[in-house]
Every structure is written in C-alpha cells, then in structure tokens.
Length: 184
Image (cartoon, rainbow, N blue to C red):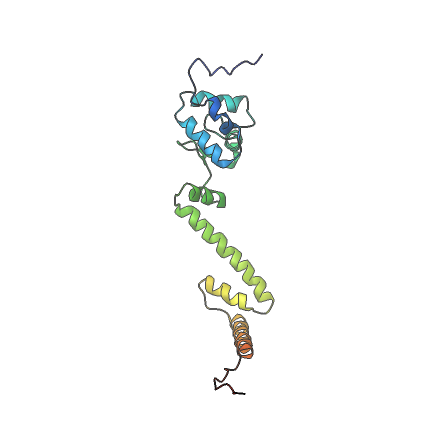
C-alpha cells in the first residue's frame, strides 16, 4: 500500500497528473516549468521539506530540482537558496559569474575576479611564448594585456607579417591584358 507523504493534509497541490511528466524530467526546460508550477502551490514549503528530509533523489519537489536539493544538503561549498528558490554561489567564482549571466544580473566582484583569472592565464601563456624566444602569439598576448610587446615578440610578429605579405604577392596573378580577340 502506498502511503502519501504527511504534508498532503487534504490541501490540493498545484501539480496534476497532466503535469506529472514535468516533475520527473531532467530537461532544464521541464524543470523550470515544474518550478513555476510549484511557485504558486500552497504545499510548496512542506513538499520541499519532505524532499530534503526523505531524501528524494529524483524529480522536482517544492520547486527544487534534484541538483538544487543536493546543493542544499551539502552546503560546505558556500551555496544557498535565494528568496526565489534559485541556488546562489559565493561571488568571485567562475560558476557564480555564470549563474549571474543565467539570471541576467551583473556583479562587479565576479567580473573583476574573471578578469584577474583571464589575465593570469594570459600571463602564463605569455611565459610559454617567451620560452620559445618570442612569437607572434606573444605579441598579441602583450597587446591583450594592455602592454607594448617586448622586442623578441615584436620581431617575431614583424617576420610573420613579412612572410604573409610575400605569400600574398606570390599568389597574385598578373593582370591579364584585355585586347582584341584574333579573328580566324
């Protein structure tokens, strides 16, 4: 015999057999639709509590997906749920920046941290290019970092441009003279 959860105290939930497939789906679109249905449900809090205490491993319960419930149950990573039931991450991380983008928000702290990570990656790559003795890629990295390219990278870039110009000249066809066609 199936025993319904205790939070079903006779109140009619917003989910119906017609929408049941949304609540068991792992498709993000279906999960968003299920969460939207849960948002107006009078049993949302009890349903979410049930899913967190039982714990339910699959589906959307109380507006929380399985992934969100795992994050709530393992809070050691600094995550939390905001007032709209969305999982929030500590600012300054790449994943937090992506969450801000998904929610159409801007965050100066996340953007500054991403700029620092990008610059650090470019500096590491620039060190590799310098180990090769300077390269055209090194010259581009210098410019992206907002600095004037060093002499070896500038020289490599100048050589690269000279070779490309010579190759273009070699591949150009001489202009054909347009004259009268010979009559036979």
